[in-house]
Amino acid sequence: MRLPTLNLLGPGRLGRSLAYLWQQTGVLQIQDIVSRDITHSQQAVTFIGAGHSCALDNIRPADFTLVATSDDVMADAVAALAAKTKLRKGDVIFHCSGALPSTLLIPLKTEGVGIASIHPLASFATPETAVKQFSGTFCGCEGDAAALTRLGPIFDAIGAQRFIVDPAQKTLYHAGAVLACNDLVALMEAALRCMAAAGIARDIAWQALRQMAMGTLNNLDNLTPAQALTGPIARGDATTVTRQMAATQALDANVAATYRTLGQMAMELAASRPVDQGRLNPNQIAALQQALRQEP
Image (cartoon, rainbow, N blue to C red):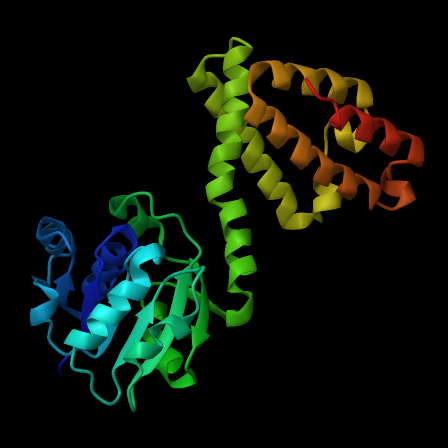
């Protein structure tokens, strides 16, 4: 039986990771791989173990086409693809951007062609790591019902857990993903800078912070954020917060700004607790607000 074919436009880390998984599970036959840099597409063919590196002018019709370029050039890529490709009734065009709606693909939506967006909530730091970690990944989906129906089985086959996203709210949806994933990396770097300035070796600091962060995430599996919150702000300890604001300001303005912003949100959580669970009183809130407002 003939496998459905997939063309990949933009074989970056996400695109080549998904194509590799589909090729390995045997649900799709990877066909044409297109990149502005032919070396890039040839490297993708090698990694995936299938497909044909080609120019956009030579792309063949496929059952599925994944547009996996970066967000800032995707509209141009869609326009170029619309001018070159021959689409057939039943073909599905999709992208995996969390920030852009599937309507970006409308130039490709001829009669009988479906468009959709399926965004994996995962970090694709390297394809080699991503393909090992993908199973179980949650994926935000939106687009034509028929296209999503076609795409569902191929994502299920590689272990995706799908849920529907409102396309009108994708900016906020993606902002949430950025905060939990990309900004977590920045937050850990801020913590490591503090530890380094305190004389803690980076490898020891990383192991200690990682263990503590994992414990916090485990707590959040069973508790609300307000219940899971610990530390000086949760206790209403304005004296400690005052000292730490001053120390971070002397160290790094960005670290201090991060401490302040997250501290304000932590204060909101602590103030939202029930009284019998340690809710901050008005005097504690005022003292913490004053501590967090410190300027160098």
